[in-house]
Length: 153
Image (cartoon, rainbow, N blue to C red; front, top):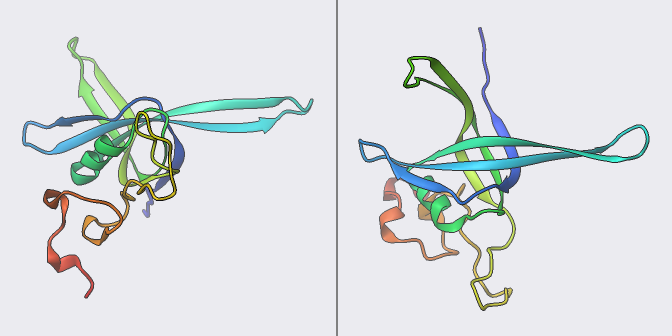
């Protein structure tokens, strides 16, 4: 049986990304995304419904999201659905469907720093979907660069 698992969502973060480490040392960030749909009903009234989606981001991408994103920022997330199951303290099985992000694109200009007004010369936050080694538009710390084997020249 064939299957295909791909999710593309665009919305606004409902809170700042939460970064933590697993017991094995892997970095993981939790994002909460609000995705809204607007339409007009038969009487011409505008209607809106918002869907809240939990997104999990791993390793270098998690660090970038934690560093550059904040509540209210628009993002485009590409990834796949993931079902997490666990047992609570009472022994009951619980489950949660969420998106495991493969890429997160930072949409729009970066927020202005306190006391500053945004300018065209101000660099944008890096596009988290571009491999770190290929980024030249922002000062990315050396510890986030990928090895030279992935550079196409």
